[in-house]
Structure formats: C-alpha cells, structure tokens
Length: 306
Image 1 (cartoon, rainbow, N blue to C red):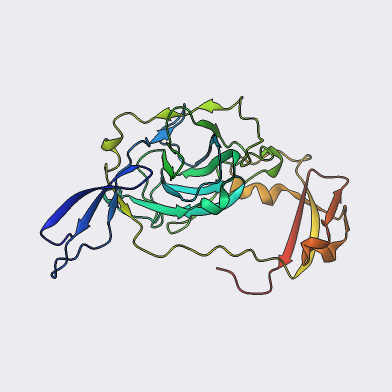
Image 2: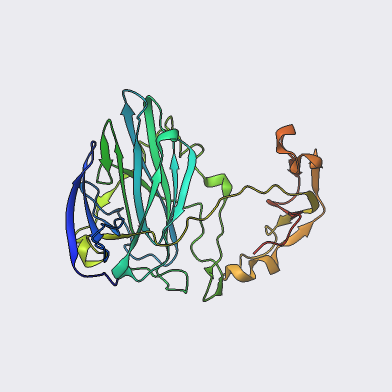
C-alpha cells in the first residue's frame, strides 16, 4: 500500500462506537477518505477441525435482539477465502476482493434496512480452499465481522455458532488455475432456513477465536478498493431437457470427475408444470423420478453466461 506523506493517524469517535481509521493528507491539507479499518471488538474466528482444508465450506451464525429498529447499522466483514453474507435470511453481500494477504481487504455494508425490532440473525457461508489460484490467495480458515448500530455493537467471537457445511463436496474436479475446483452441493443436506432467526442452531459447534491472528492477517484491513459486484437473479427462459440419473448398478468412481461416466441416464422422469420454470410466481416445477436416485435437467437462460 503506497501512502502519501505525511500520514496522520486519527482516532475518530462515532456516536455508536470507537473506530480507528488511517487517513491520507492531500497536498492542500484536506483529509482524504479512510483507507483502512481496524476491528475494535471483532475477532477472527474458525471452528474445530482443519485450519487449512483443501476445499471446504463453513456456516456461521449469530443471533441477537434489538429493542427497536436502528437508525444506523454498518457491517465490516472479511474472510479467508470467500464469504456470502446474509442478514435475517436476506442476501447482503459477497467478497472479499482477492489480494495479497499482507493487504487483506474488508467490505462495508449498510444493513439498516435488513434489521428489525426483536430477534435478528447474521449468518455467512465461508469458503476456505487452501489451493492458491489466480482468484484465491488463502492463508488459513478465518472469518471476521463487526456490526455497529446506534443501539449496540457486536463482533465475531467464540459465542458464534459454526458448522462444517457437509452438503458441499470437498473432493471435486479441478477445472483451471483461474477457477480452481468445481462446486458440488447436495441440496438434500442443507439445513433448511439456517440463515433465518427462527432456526435452531443448538446442535452446531461453538466458533473458536483464531489465536495470534496477526500472524495470518494484518491488524488493519484495507477498505475495498474496487466496486462491489451487482447481484442479479436471472430465471430460465425454458426447460430444454430432463433425465433420470442412477449409479446404483455400478461401482462408485473414486474420482468425482469420472462419476458422470458411470452414471446411467434413465428416461424415467415425469415433469409437471414445466412452463413455471420461466415464471416462478406461478408455482414450482415438479420433477418425479421413479427408477434412479437423481435428476438432471438442462435450462436455457436466454443469454450467454460467463
């Protein structure tokens, strides 16, 4: 990080918390916007098990109560390697930007509109893939978040709940150095409603605070330097084809990349209301498979996708 000289270290006080910010001074003596953020109450956390898994997903949750709707609410969040953030079940953001771990970046979100009076929950799905690619620069598993409102503040610590997301398969095929491994998820194993406040996480593990976290990440995190990605939901234009899949009559392949080659494609799927795939508000598309143990289908998204 190239900082202009002289550098002024300023401790600023907001009406809801202390926040340490580093500011640059321009040639005319005007303070520029802060470039880094230092957590005051948040700690890097992980959970019991591998610190450096090859390809693993972890879910984190924290429930809390608000006596009223906040007038201001800001989240600072980062992860090693990637996170998807939810507030009360609503998507809030994803990140962080890939960077040299020496200049680990943190994202900032206004989440006031997602919070409500009463019970609330912040949850996140975190990817730790300890195989460096051009899009990932991992150090070890970690997640950090701090919520600051005009009513209260909270940060990641050992009071958070955590779970290894076993629905995501770890030994998936490797695509390229740019993309790394494929993402395989078994939707049948996803805990229904885990991003919502009413979900019971009592069977989840307690999070662990990462000891000597400054060995892995800087104490001050760089504020995001590129624009946030835009999330747009695109519905399929039509259902192209569908088929049953079964491997019950063949040995399971050791290499997941070859598993498809030993699966049997079966013409045993019945589909009702296929037109609903283009208009979800009309209701679900119902697939029924009678002979195999899986269903495959192909959809037309109506445009080229990268």
